[in-house]
Length: 296
Image (cartoon, rainbow, N blue to C red; front, side):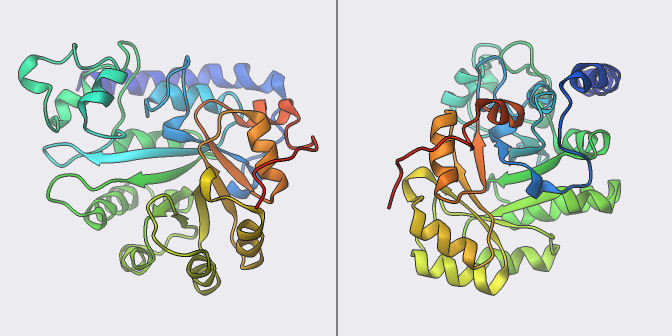
C-alpha cells in the first residue's frame, strides 16, 4: 500500500526532526508520569491547520509537538473489516475532509474498502491511518496515550471491534495496551469489555447516556471508571461528587481557554479539544485566572 510506505518514512523523519522541534520549548511533562499528568485530550487526533476531525497522522505529530500527549481517535471498520481512524462514514464527513470529489463516483457512497480509504488523502495532503499506524505512533512516542472512540460499523458489534483492537495490539506489543484508554458508552459495556481485556483505565462517556447523575456516581464508586461529559452536563455539584467517588472528570469539546478555565474551577480535570494543545493551555494562564460561569 503506497500510503503505508509514506507513513513509515514520515514516522522515521519525525523522529529525527522532533527533538529539534520540541526540546527548545522545554516541555515540563516527562515520559512515565502517566496520562493523569495531562489536561488536554486531542479530539480526533486534534485539529491541524484549522481543520478538525481529520484523525490524520500529521495531526497527531503536529499536536504532539505542541505538548499534547492524550489523543482521542475515532475508529470504524472498512467494508472489508479493517479497523481505521475515521469519525463517520457520511457524505458530510467526506466533503469536510475534501474527499468527496477525490473519490471516483462509484465509490463515494457507503463504506469504502480498506485500500480506497488508505489511498485517499485527507484534505489533499494528510495521511489516513489504520490501527497498525496508531500502534506505530505508540511505539515511537512512548509517552503518548490513545483514547478510543469506537463506533459500530457494518455487521460487527463494538465488542467485535474491541477484540480486533486487542488482538492486533497484543501481537504487536502487549505493553501498549497500558497506554490505550477505551471509552465506553453505557454501564453494561464495562463488563463486556473486561471479558476481552481488563484495561487499566476506562472512560465512561456520557454524551449518549440516559443515566442519572446518581447512577453515574454509583457506577464510579463500584468500578473506578473515569468520566467524560458534554459541557451541557457539567456543573460543580456533579463534578465534585464524581471526584469524591474517585473519578477523573473530563469535559468535551472545548476550544477556548477561558471556557476551559471556568470548568477547571468547577473541578474538571481534563478537556477534549480540537485546537488547544497542552502547551497552549499552559501558556494561556486559563488554569490560573479567577473566572465565573458554568455554575450549577
